[in-house]
Image (cartoon, rainbow, N blue to C red; front, side, top):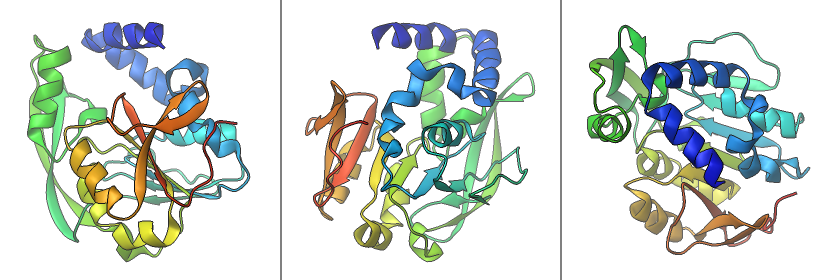
Length: 242
């Protein structure tokens, strides 16, 4: 775990190495199982059927989940989707999710004409914080794009598992899916972020608790530690990896 973190930090701090690696990784994520695969192993369980991949980017996470369980149905969400080819058992939504229907300004960082699309965010300060941490000497140009937003609740979907990576907009997305969460009770996986306490408080109000992976099991994570936070509904019985 620590080696993968060191590896990640080295790559992030050199733009061209970062760009070349991330481009390759997005095409072939299963060549690097030590980076992300562990947190999706639970999906090998046959009780999982419908996955919401919110912030799907170039489908790299979907490829990992599909390699674990080829019977899954995927609903992919991203307002900036470059790869629009049809993929079996998937439905692509080319808009953003939020707490209400409308339009929002998406901030998109560029360097030498290259969009760092993994950092696209509704919050400019989120991009600047990343730059100050990893890319201090890199000159970025921020472009703006108006994108359509809808709520999860308005889509009438089913889900067993939600992967959420929307650059500090997780709280708003989940708020717009309150009825969906209460009805479907999916497991939720999201990156730790500045609004994580707000997210946890909201999910607690609908009977969700935070967890983390420890020794191939899910253990309670009331202090919200780690890069990735799982939230299980109180009725869930998936408490260990396959």
